[in-house]
Length: 76
Image (cartoon, rainbow, N blue to C red; front, side, top):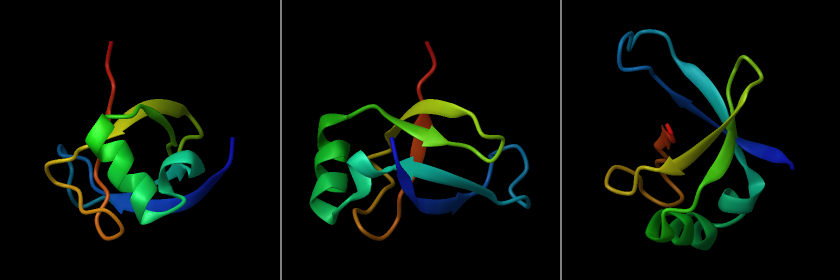
């Protein structure tokens, strides 16, 4: 599995500390891939700053393919 796109976000409990996360190439290789993953609710791995791989989905209501990517962890 390869990771190439890094996004910066902030945790809701402390918005002043940015977090860099890296998305799996399978969902961010093109804008069409992002759009498809958002539409389907595809689950993909995200590498967090501590090195952990966590299953996530795009938050389709707040994300804009190719511009703004917001991910949500899958709990379960």
